[in-house]
Length: 282
Image (cartoon, rainbow, N blue to C red; front, side, top):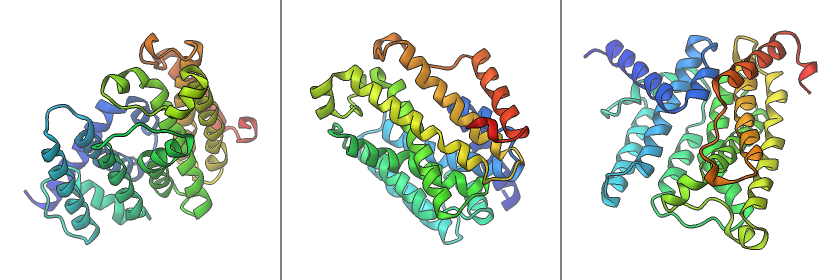
Protein backbone atom coordinates (compact mmCIF):
# COMPACT_ATOMS: atom_id res chain seq x y z
CA UNK A 1 0.00 0.00 0.00
CA UNK A 2 1.44 3.40 -0.98
CA UNK A 3 1.45 6.49 1.23
CA UNK A 4 -1.67 8.05 -0.29
CA UNK A 5 -3.65 4.85 0.13
CA UNK A 6 -2.41 4.51 3.72
CA UNK A 7 -3.46 8.08 4.48
CA UNK A 8 -6.91 7.63 2.93
CA UNK A 9 -7.44 4.43 4.91
CA UNK A 10 -6.33 6.12 8.13
CA UNK A 11 -8.63 9.11 7.56
CA UNK A 12 -11.60 6.80 6.95
CA UNK A 13 -10.86 4.76 10.05
CA UNK A 14 -10.69 7.83 12.31
CA UNK A 15 -13.95 9.23 10.88
CA UNK A 16 -15.72 5.91 11.42
CA UNK A 17 -14.50 5.69 15.01
CA UNK A 18 -15.69 9.19 15.80
CA UNK A 19 -19.05 8.60 14.15
CA UNK A 20 -19.58 5.39 16.15
CA UNK A 21 -18.47 6.63 19.56
CA UNK A 22 -18.96 10.42 19.71
CA UNK A 23 -22.22 11.15 17.93
CA UNK A 24 -22.73 14.66 19.33
CA UNK A 25 -19.14 15.67 18.63
CA UNK A 26 -19.29 14.09 15.17
CA UNK A 27 -22.51 15.98 14.44
CA UNK A 28 -21.09 19.34 15.46
CA UNK A 29 -17.97 18.99 13.28
CA UNK A 30 -19.74 18.23 9.97
CA UNK A 31 -19.65 21.85 8.81
CA UNK A 32 -15.91 22.32 9.32
CA UNK A 33 -13.65 22.66 6.30
CA UNK A 34 -12.29 19.29 5.27
CA UNK A 35 -8.77 19.83 6.62
CA UNK A 36 -10.05 20.85 10.05
CA UNK A 37 -12.65 18.08 10.14
CA UNK A 38 -10.11 15.42 9.27
CA UNK A 39 -7.68 16.73 11.89
CA UNK A 40 -10.34 16.61 14.61
CA UNK A 41 -11.29 13.08 13.54
CA UNK A 42 -7.64 12.01 13.50
CA UNK A 43 -7.06 13.16 17.06
CA UNK A 44 -10.30 11.54 18.16
CA UNK A 45 -9.15 8.25 16.64
CA UNK A 46 -5.90 8.43 18.61
CA UNK A 47 -7.58 9.54 21.82
CA UNK A 48 -10.25 6.85 21.53
CA UNK A 49 -7.54 4.24 21.08
CA UNK A 50 -5.91 5.38 24.33
CA UNK A 51 -9.25 5.45 26.15
CA UNK A 52 -10.16 1.96 24.92
CA UNK A 53 -6.80 0.59 26.08
CA UNK A 54 -7.71 1.69 29.59
CA UNK A 55 -11.43 0.86 29.58
CA UNK A 56 -12.47 -1.84 27.15
CA UNK A 57 -13.06 -5.27 28.74
CA UNK A 58 -10.88 -8.19 27.75
CA UNK A 59 -7.15 -7.39 27.88
CA UNK A 60 -5.11 -8.29 30.93
CA UNK A 61 -3.36 -5.51 32.89
CA UNK A 62 -0.06 -6.58 31.31
CA UNK A 63 -1.57 -6.38 27.83
CA UNK A 64 -2.94 -2.92 28.56
CA UNK A 65 0.44 -1.66 29.76
CA UNK A 66 2.14 -3.13 26.71
CA UNK A 67 -0.48 -1.42 24.57
CA UNK A 68 0.33 1.97 26.07
CA UNK A 69 4.04 1.41 25.52
CA UNK A 70 3.31 0.65 21.87
CA UNK A 71 0.97 3.64 21.55
CA UNK A 72 3.54 6.05 22.98
CA UNK A 73 6.16 4.57 20.68
CA UNK A 74 3.93 5.10 17.67
CA UNK A 75 3.24 8.68 18.75
CA UNK A 76 6.97 9.32 19.27
CA UNK A 77 7.62 8.09 15.74
CA UNK A 78 4.90 10.33 14.30
CA UNK A 79 6.36 13.31 16.16
CA UNK A 80 9.75 12.56 14.56
CA UNK A 81 8.19 12.38 11.12
CA UNK A 82 8.36 8.59 10.97
CA UNK A 83 5.52 6.09 10.61
CA UNK A 84 6.73 2.69 11.69
CA UNK A 85 3.54 1.63 13.50
CA UNK A 86 0.60 -0.29 12.14
CA UNK A 87 -1.78 1.69 14.36
CA UNK A 88 -4.59 2.87 12.07
CA UNK A 89 -4.56 6.46 13.32
CA UNK A 90 -0.89 7.22 12.60
CA UNK A 91 -1.08 8.60 9.05
CA UNK A 92 -4.09 10.80 9.81
CA UNK A 93 -2.49 12.16 12.99
CA UNK A 94 0.76 12.86 11.15
CA UNK A 95 -1.20 14.89 8.58
CA UNK A 96 -2.98 16.82 11.36
CA UNK A 97 0.30 17.66 13.10
CA UNK A 98 1.78 18.85 9.79
CA UNK A 99 -1.19 21.09 9.05
CA UNK A 100 -1.97 22.67 12.44
CA UNK A 101 0.05 24.00 15.43
CA UNK A 102 -1.00 21.18 17.75
CA UNK A 103 1.30 20.78 20.75
CA UNK A 104 2.55 17.19 20.93
CA UNK A 105 2.94 17.68 24.69
CA UNK A 106 -0.85 17.99 25.01
CA UNK A 107 -1.34 14.70 23.18
CA UNK A 108 1.17 12.90 25.40
CA UNK A 109 -0.52 14.39 28.49
CA UNK A 110 -3.85 12.94 27.42
CA UNK A 111 -2.32 9.52 26.80
CA UNK A 112 -0.73 9.65 30.26
CA UNK A 113 -4.10 10.58 31.78
CA UNK A 114 -5.77 7.60 30.15
CA UNK A 115 -2.95 5.31 31.25
CA UNK A 116 -3.48 6.50 34.81
CA UNK A 117 -6.89 4.80 34.72
CA UNK A 118 -5.09 1.44 34.73
CA UNK A 119 -4.54 1.97 38.45
CA UNK A 120 -7.74 3.77 39.38
CA UNK A 121 -8.07 5.39 42.75
CA UNK A 122 -11.06 7.33 43.99
CA UNK A 123 -10.85 11.07 43.45
CA UNK A 124 -10.95 12.71 46.85
CA UNK A 125 -11.28 16.46 46.21
CA UNK A 126 -12.46 18.94 43.61
CA UNK A 127 -8.82 19.84 42.97
CA UNK A 128 -8.05 16.22 42.09
CA UNK A 129 -11.10 16.11 39.83
CA UNK A 130 -9.86 19.25 38.08
CA UNK A 131 -6.39 17.80 37.55
CA UNK A 132 -7.73 14.54 36.16
CA UNK A 133 -10.17 16.32 33.85
CA UNK A 134 -7.46 18.65 32.61
CA UNK A 135 -5.31 15.67 31.62
CA UNK A 136 -7.96 13.65 29.80
CA UNK A 137 -10.13 16.44 28.34
CA UNK A 138 -8.56 19.86 28.85
CA UNK A 139 -5.82 18.67 26.52
CA UNK A 140 -8.46 17.86 23.90
CA UNK A 141 -9.76 21.41 24.19
CA UNK A 142 -6.28 22.82 23.63
CA UNK A 143 -5.68 20.64 20.59
CA UNK A 144 -9.11 21.52 19.19
CA UNK A 145 -8.48 25.26 19.45
CA UNK A 146 -5.18 24.85 17.58
CA UNK A 147 -7.15 23.21 14.77
CA UNK A 148 -10.09 25.63 14.76
CA UNK A 149 -7.85 28.65 14.42
CA UNK A 150 -7.13 30.27 17.80
CA UNK A 151 -3.75 29.05 19.03
CA UNK A 152 -2.66 31.97 21.23
CA UNK A 153 -2.09 30.96 24.85
CA UNK A 154 -5.23 32.63 26.21
CA UNK A 155 -7.41 30.82 23.67
CA UNK A 156 -5.70 27.51 24.42
CA UNK A 157 -6.35 28.05 28.14
CA UNK A 158 -10.01 28.83 27.46
CA UNK A 159 -10.23 25.76 25.23
CA UNK A 160 -8.77 23.73 28.08
CA UNK A 161 -11.49 24.98 30.42
CA UNK A 162 -14.12 24.11 27.82
CA UNK A 163 -12.68 20.60 27.56
CA UNK A 164 -12.80 20.26 31.35
CA UNK A 165 -16.48 21.25 31.28
CA UNK A 166 -17.14 18.46 28.78
CA UNK A 167 -15.36 15.95 31.02
CA UNK A 168 -17.41 17.11 34.01
CA UNK A 169 -20.50 16.50 31.89
CA UNK A 170 -19.31 13.01 30.96
CA UNK A 171 -18.77 12.25 34.65
CA UNK A 172 -22.27 13.45 35.57
CA UNK A 173 -23.79 11.40 32.75
CA UNK A 174 -21.88 8.20 33.56
CA UNK A 175 -21.86 8.04 37.38
CA UNK A 176 -23.79 4.76 37.60
CA UNK A 177 -21.87 3.07 34.77
CA UNK A 178 -18.49 4.19 36.13
CA UNK A 179 -19.32 2.92 39.61
CA UNK A 180 -20.33 -0.46 38.19
CA UNK A 181 -16.88 -0.59 36.59
CA UNK A 182 -15.12 0.31 39.83
CA UNK A 183 -14.41 3.92 38.83
CA UNK A 184 -15.31 6.75 41.20
CA UNK A 185 -14.88 10.23 39.78
CA UNK A 186 -17.08 12.16 42.20
CA UNK A 187 -14.81 13.66 44.91
CA UNK A 188 -15.23 11.20 47.77
CA UNK A 189 -14.39 13.60 50.60
CA UNK A 190 -17.04 15.98 49.31
CA UNK A 191 -19.57 13.18 48.82
CA UNK A 192 -19.05 12.12 52.45
CA UNK A 193 -19.52 15.71 53.58
CA UNK A 194 -22.35 16.91 51.33
CA UNK A 195 -23.94 13.86 49.74
CA UNK A 196 -23.73 12.61 46.17
CA UNK A 197 -26.57 14.76 44.82
CA UNK A 198 -25.09 18.01 46.11
CA UNK A 199 -21.65 17.15 44.72
CA UNK A 200 -23.20 16.43 41.33
CA UNK A 201 -25.02 19.75 41.51
CA UNK A 202 -21.76 21.57 42.24
CA UNK A 203 -20.02 19.86 39.30
CA UNK A 204 -22.93 20.86 37.05
CA UNK A 205 -22.52 24.49 38.10
CA UNK A 206 -18.79 24.36 37.35
CA UNK A 207 -19.47 22.86 33.92
CA UNK A 208 -22.07 25.49 33.04
CA UNK A 209 -19.76 28.34 33.99
CA UNK A 210 -17.03 26.97 31.74
CA UNK A 211 -19.29 26.40 28.76
CA UNK A 212 -19.39 30.19 28.57
CA UNK A 213 -15.85 30.04 27.15
CA UNK A 214 -17.41 28.96 23.84
CA UNK A 215 -18.86 32.45 23.37
CA UNK A 216 -15.46 34.11 23.77
CA UNK A 217 -13.69 31.55 21.61
CA UNK A 218 -16.29 31.76 18.83
CA UNK A 219 -15.27 35.38 18.26
CA UNK A 220 -11.65 34.32 17.75
CA UNK A 221 -12.00 31.64 15.08
CA UNK A 222 -12.89 32.00 11.38
CA UNK A 223 -16.57 31.80 10.52
CA UNK A 224 -15.93 28.82 8.26
CA UNK A 225 -17.98 26.45 10.39
CA UNK A 226 -15.58 26.71 13.32
CA UNK A 227 -17.82 29.14 15.22
CA UNK A 228 -20.86 26.95 14.84
CA UNK A 229 -18.90 23.82 15.80
CA UNK A 230 -17.73 25.47 19.02
CA UNK A 231 -21.15 26.81 19.94
CA UNK A 232 -23.02 23.64 19.05
CA UNK A 233 -20.64 21.39 20.96
CA UNK A 234 -20.95 23.51 24.09
CA UNK A 235 -24.73 23.89 23.75
CA UNK A 236 -25.42 20.19 23.17
CA UNK A 237 -23.15 19.10 26.01
CA UNK A 238 -24.80 21.74 28.19
CA UNK A 239 -28.07 20.07 27.30
CA UNK A 240 -26.81 16.85 28.89
CA UNK A 241 -26.25 18.79 32.12
CA UNK A 242 -29.83 20.06 31.86
CA UNK A 243 -31.14 16.50 31.56
CA UNK A 244 -29.12 15.37 34.60
CA UNK A 245 -30.53 18.29 36.58
CA UNK A 246 -34.11 17.59 35.53
CA UNK A 247 -33.64 14.08 36.85
CA UNK A 248 -32.64 15.59 40.19
CA UNK A 249 -29.07 14.31 39.89
CA UNK A 250 -30.19 10.70 40.21
CA UNK A 251 -27.55 8.42 38.58
CA UNK A 252 -30.03 5.54 38.52
CA UNK A 253 -32.43 7.43 36.23
CA UNK A 254 -30.59 6.19 33.14
CA UNK A 255 -27.92 7.68 30.91
CA UNK A 256 -28.69 11.31 30.15
CA UNK A 257 -28.84 12.16 26.46
CA UNK A 258 -30.06 15.07 24.37
CA UNK A 259 -32.65 13.55 22.05
CA UNK A 260 -32.54 14.30 18.34
CA UNK A 261 -35.34 16.93 18.18
CA UNK A 262 -33.75 18.91 21.02
CA UNK A 263 -30.32 18.48 19.49
CA UNK A 264 -31.55 19.85 16.16
CA UNK A 265 -33.16 22.79 17.95
CA UNK A 266 -29.95 23.61 19.76
CA UNK A 267 -27.98 23.27 16.52
CA UNK A 268 -30.28 25.72 14.73
CA UNK A 269 -30.02 28.19 17.59
CA UNK A 270 -26.24 28.04 17.39
CA UNK A 271 -26.35 28.44 13.62
CA UNK A 272 -28.28 31.69 14.03
CA UNK A 273 -25.85 32.89 16.68
CA UNK A 274 -22.82 32.07 14.55
CA UNK A 275 -24.07 33.64 11.33
CA UNK A 276 -26.14 36.60 12.52
CA UNK A 277 -23.69 38.13 14.96
CA UNK A 278 -22.29 37.10 18.32
CA UNK A 279 -23.73 39.87 20.48
CA UNK A 280 -26.95 37.95 21.11
CA UNK A 281 -25.03 34.97 22.49
CA UNK A 282 -23.99 36.62 25.72
